[in-house]
Length: 211
Ligand code: SAH
Image (cartoon, helix red, strand yellow):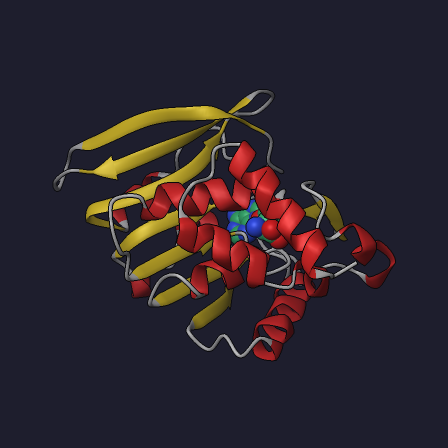
């Protein structure tokens, strides 16, 4: 299940789908995705598919985790990253191995607590977690060089744009029914450049928190 061959097969699949950042491929290979999934499903951990993690949420598909990470990093090293929607913590773990500091917010407390334990097991100490409505970002830790959003709003929340550093990059799924993955770059104080990358499918960005 967790054999080297199984993980190599996943990495080959990611390559076939166009992921070519070697650092990203390496952390995708080396990070144990099975510990981010309930035991009953862990035999499917290295399939390229989203899986349920409870509370109507899913751990994202490995392809989209790799793709968003690659897009976030493709202009060079990134120091401080905000992640909205910690979920299982898998994407958090990937980011923590590639950037200096990760600030990750989650609105469902029990998911956040499990994610925290997993990150501790992996000794990833450069990720800080907060239980909050992430549509508002994490103002006290802003500005961020990168923001990665793992749940889809109907429109890009202005609070997130404001928390982006000049030169910073926001990767975010947008839309209700059909969604598109967008890259928004902040060029200066008031200029933002938006690129549509591809179609995608995320759970919705919801407001409020769950204890
Ligand atoms: N990358 C994560 C994805 C989890 S799914 C993983 O692979 O595990 C998206 C997560 O976003 C869910 O856990 C959901 O609860 C969370 N979420 C949705 N709306 C949110 C909001 N406004 N603030 C914070 N988290 C939110």
